[in-house]
Image (cartoon, rainbow, N blue to C red; front, top):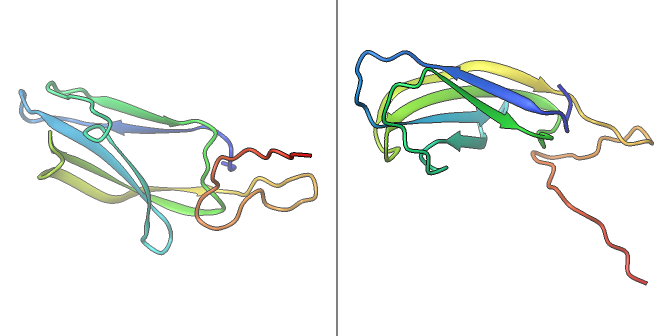
Length: 121
């Protein structure tokens, strides 16, 4: 995939118990092991109190820059304090740089910040 394309992450869960209140989190690391970003149902104020089996997270027009990224998935209590299950580095993805008309990458570093230029006379 290339910087600026949509990314869809899919998490599939299975449950041994019902009636749990829980949260689902996805953490993305760079090649150095630094957290680049995370997504979490608890932080996004989603209340989960039944066993949903599939979660999808869509990142439109992604701002990831050139590099390899690794994914960890966490299932926690409804306050994101205690882990029920944790799977580190379950998958990875590669992002290639989008280039401008001159062939230069549109961004460098860890993140491409959305921005808008304005020129005043």
